[in-house]
Image (tube, rainbow, N blue to C red; front, side, top):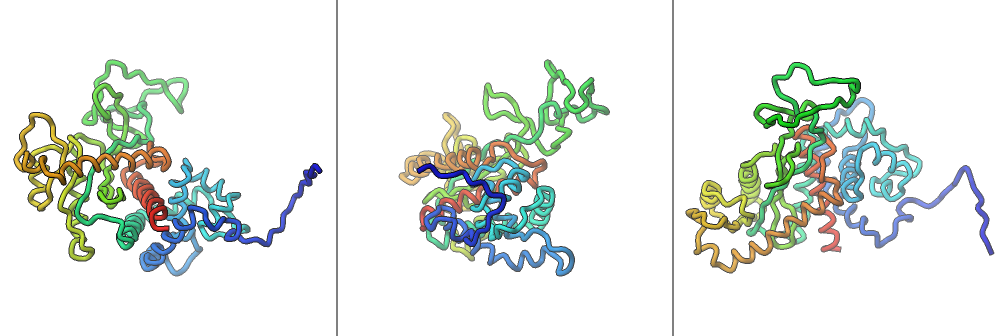
Length: 364
């Protein structure tokens, strides 16, 4: 018998979002870990807000919203706030009732400035890493570092000479025609008018130059978790500097967490005498891919002939899986924000989402 399409203007439901989400849904363990980490950040949240005034969006919901945006490839704050109005799964993850109003997209974006000011995203990311360490999923001795370029939210038309008084204009003021053929352009003489922190770089020989940022990840070698990230301006030598920053942050946890880095893997971009010397001074063996015919003190046959070196060189390729997930699923191929600080916040939360996904699959 054919059923009737009985359209109704109103629907009364006595089923909570908790019961609508299947018991074996993969987002359930992610929510459990995220809620546990956020409980430990309560004191940080108390310092961020005044005890009087109009209540704002809870910081717990802001952070979990950013996790959802990475896991479900939501491309903008506006689209997320629109989707939240009718997506029961999202409402369940944020502990919102079906009757509660969605966020205003402008308020949602503005409220995240407070998270950035108090480094709440960094604290949340560190909490995710500690959750993986408590589950005995991380290596405390062997790590891999790598970097990539992330496209900036800026047009090549905005890359204009720094000493230019007025930008070119024509009959289309919102999108003027710009002809820069034959013009020599570089970061020393030019800058983007819409995103001054972006830099003109290319990924390799024969590739086109783009406005972009540098993003760097430190991976542990046991299960391929991201244990630290660093966001920088794009440049030719920033990879090695960012690697040392992350290694030093990791070494500070030695006494408190039992972390003692012994080896660091990397590609040929890290094969430099100064970087090898810096690692040796920190008592870390440089398991770096070697540039042919480049002799470097501290990285010779005594290191490259070892079994550990061969293992590090095989495992270090897994860091590309992290970047691949962040760019395809996490929506991090091109940043949604302008400025290094906001770019770094997006990178932290996308990496945190990747770790939460991996933890939930390996523990549950």
